[in-house]
Length: 60
Length: 238
Image 1 (cartoon, chains in turn green, brown):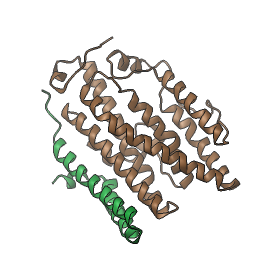
Image 2: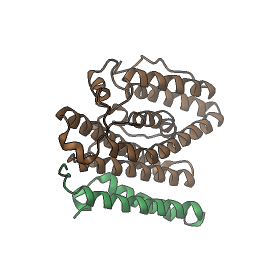
Image 3: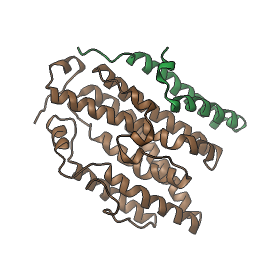
Image 4: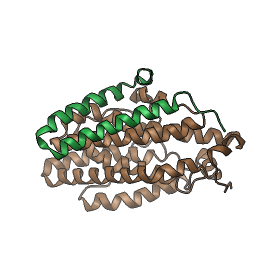
């Protein structure tokens, strides 16, 4: 078996949580228009962190 | 032609060229997956025309991040760390179409219509490929890409029917993205593409995939009442 790259599992797990959080916020916003603004705000906060790409901070 | 099917446990026994090409194609695919959100999230999440569109922009980004995650896991398992693409500046993306920022809604819509469709073609290259862990993650990814293409199609149509200005904007965006889409298939007669095919990592020559794309997308543009841009003007890879 090849040796896996360092942090493959940790990063995978972190991103899986990020994706779940985003889907959760989107679902809330679509289901209940009253919380759409908050849901968009939550998505923006999560995505801003991902777009920054500071991987070492995510997997600490 | 190499016709075996490879599992992770077989990877170490493979020819160095196979290892190199698999690592390379996974890195580029990971870069393209995360390259999309880097193009449109910053400007389009706040600027999409309705709250529902804003939420769909976020959902699309979530799906692309998840595609990145799946590709990165397959790459990581063979010792290829693709995490550097998460912080890569847009101008350093492997594929030209991802080097920039989307600043208008019409560009976001046409990006879905034309560029996500190329993304589908890229993924289809791996159908029945020799590396089974890659093959296994494809169905869900392709399914979600189909949703992005459909959304881009619908949003482009909305623009067109909204009036002359909307149609003009859509045409301008098509003029910009069409040639970039054609360039994404790479050079005609590429030696590397031939080696990918030899190792069963891709199915079609670059020019064949490009032609199939043209045959699919031109009738769609015509049906929308849009002009087909000159397929050679502004191209970098012929």
